[in-house]
Length: 529
Ligand SMILES: Cc1cc2nc3c(=O)[nH]c(=O)nc-3n(C[C@H](O)[C@H](O)[C@H](O)COP(=O)(O)OP(=O)(O)OC[C@H]3O[C@@H](n4cnc5c(N)ncnc54)[C@H](O)[C@@H]3O)c2cc1C
Ligand SMILES: *[C@@H]1O[C@H](CO)[C@@H](O)[C@H](O)[C@H]1NC(C)=O
Ligand SMILES: *[C@@H]1O[C@H](CO)[C@@H](O)[C@H](O)[C@H]1NC(C)=O
Ligand SMILES: *[C@@H]1O[C@H](CO)[C@@H](O)[C@H](O)[C@H]1NC(C)=O
Ligand SMILES: *[C@@H]1O[C@H](CO)[C@@H](O)[C@H](O)[C@H]1NC(C)=O
Ligand SMILES: *[C@@H]1O[C@H](CO)[C@@H](O)[C@H](O)[C@H]1NC(C)=O
Image (cartoon, rainbow, N blue to C red; front, top):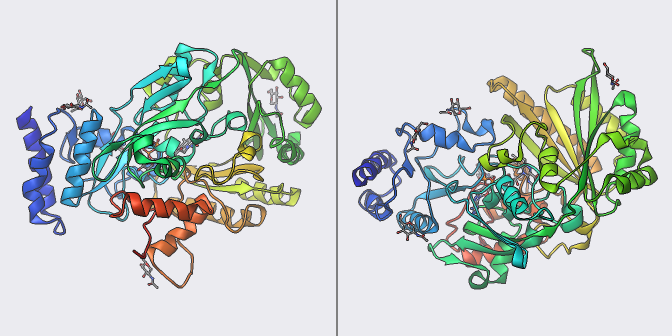
């Protein structure tokens, strides 16, 4: 085993010796430093047979693993927290840049590729996925590499009347997801994942492991919404279990333009943020073929979770949203875990045990962006959207209602500031199958143009965006005169965090003054010191 490790380190050494800006010192100390970690099958260089398999394993955006995207010098898969600590200490000592990956769902792939910090090594936390549910105090400790699907499964296994308030997509990694906010179908009832975070374990740039008490309330605040990769390596989160009824109700109701989609969506904007907290109805908007023909239309699909039975739901819908024309036969009563599968879009034939595989439902190449809407978008605005959507191959918009608990939490209580006054969040996704260069350029151009068009209808000063929907376009075109990384960061920083940004910067400057944890959009340190 030692000789296996040794040969891997020699391979790495060879690679490093070709990168002139790493000092000769590294060549002696690096293998020596890491060799204190005696674990087999944990270190992969590009010449290892399984390197690409492991790199690809959780890369959710195929756009970020094309042949031209920068690849890591090596991937290290620690088995426990001591291994992560050692990797951090070695990397810091030797000046090696690290990226951290939990579930690999970063929209710009910055957990496994890097446009700015070369060379780099990926620390992949997929082997750390323990989940310990404690019904006695309504909490769960979950390690960074576990997916939210596994987490939901393990909670439901212990109790049918407890759940977790976090993301809808079941393959999200706990490590990157929670720290960026983490919204899901219970956000109107219980807020975000970070609103239900009780404690965390984090490894700082000195390789020390800290919990909420030892990191202090400021750092705990910062990692509870400030986004991944800025403060340290999150090893695990302690989250609150929230009550869910034994029976919940779901539905999925499509309406095309021909079926009055425009009028229905106008009404949804008025009512969805004001519904009872138990009701969450999001909308998928995309082009589709008109029934049985090749004529294209717009399809709007109302995808909902109600924390209660169908009779109470029908009463509420008849009273406040009759325009949708929801029928009792559209609705399905089930347990909360089954509703997780339904909302995530799995066919009924897929059993809940699929969640334990941690695998995603689909993969594609995509570019995405986000907006927050504070006044309803008028009919003319919607019509302009339809026109643009009909021109593209596989575009998708997802509208996510706010209100309820989201509006009752202070903007400064976590770094996530999009709270009171937000009616809904808009997500734009443009996907494609074939990565032909010219086509990719066109898909980028299309989504940027739609985003420019939507500017008139969404939040302003700043035009807000969700940090977990990382968008490297933000801050690219700001002509601010000054050109320090701090000024550039302020541009996306204010969009993601509003006034919380400056507090994030102050905490970062104290907690990681050497900026060890950094990436394209990590929280910067203060320019003056
Ligand atoms: C298909 C899809 C569906 C989504 N659905 C939702 C949703 O329903 N709700 C929602 O809120 N968001 C959703 N997101 C966004 C998602 O929350 C973010 O992409 C999130 O950052 C993913 O976390 P991850 O661990 O899977 O990703 P990773 O790519 O592993 O990490 C994301 C970021 O966090 C950093 N990071 C990773 N692990 C750690 C760690 N242990 N400690 C510190 N930093 C770390 C990485 O460096 C990177 O910057 C979705 C994304 C996708 C692709
Ligand atoms: C590499 O992949 C093969 C086949 O996929 C597997 O049997 C083997 O255990 C893997 N090795 C490591 C080190 O993960
Ligand atoms: C990894 O993904 C790339 C891009 O999708 C693909 O070309 C390659 O065949 C994959 N390799 C493995 C081993 O899965
Ligand atoms: C992690 O594993 C190593 C062996 O590789 C062991 O020495 C160490 O004590 C373990 N740490 C923890 C926290 O379990
Ligand atoms: C599509 O056609 C099916 C039968 O072919 C019909 O039941 C359904 O109502 C039609 N839907 C629309 C939107 O016209
Ligand atoms: C601003 O910074 C970028 C790199 O961050 C650099 O490419 C560009 O030339 C700079 N512009 C000016 C005007 O200094």
